[in-house]
Amino acid sequence: MFSKLFGQKREQATVKNFHELYYYNHKQTWTDTYWMGVPAEKCPLDMWIYQEILFSVKPDLIVETGTYRGGSAFYMASLCDLMKKGRIMTIDIDHPSDLPRHDRITYVKGSSIDQNIIQNVRDAVADAGVVLVILDSNHHKDHVLEELRLYHSFVTKGSYLIVEDTNINGHPVNPKYGPGPMEAVDAFLAENQDFEIDSTKEKFYLSFNPRGYLRRVTS
Image (cartoon, rainbow, N blue to C red; front, side, top):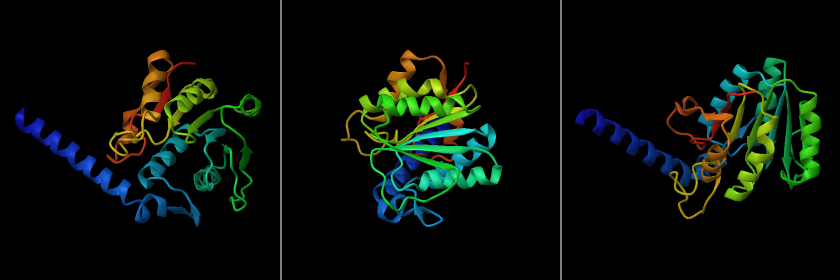
């Protein structure tokens, strides 16, 4: 028992140390990560998990808040090309002129919590079967929690509501950030029984989204 416990603690320490090494050396790691030349700024292990989720769920519509440079949307559009199914609606308050162009991507400019934007999403969801949502915009707790409350109903049973960057505010990185995505997830799950944390999506040990892969279990 002691040996097993010691092994688990050593494993956890190793994962934490590597997570911090990878995160804080971002200029050579995650901020220098590209999909076909487009900045993605994600952990490649999470990107692989996205591929597994998309193939399993086969969403008709992926709603993403937080476009940044468009790398994530472009990556998912490429996966949708391979599956011959799916489109991406990505939302951000700022859209640079060099965003990648793809027939499966619709760029929407505005705040993810603006009611006009929400109506646009609602209209898009009405024409879709399976819907998956990714939240990756403003990372402060209040904003993420508001997104969770606004967007969770769009997710179909068996699909996912993914909250990005739950690793900040000391989970285990950037401990001085203040309440962020992880705290928003905890608050959301305390008031909503429609989702469960799918910890199998953290199987590669390093994930920028710990406790952030939420699977809808009810209709």
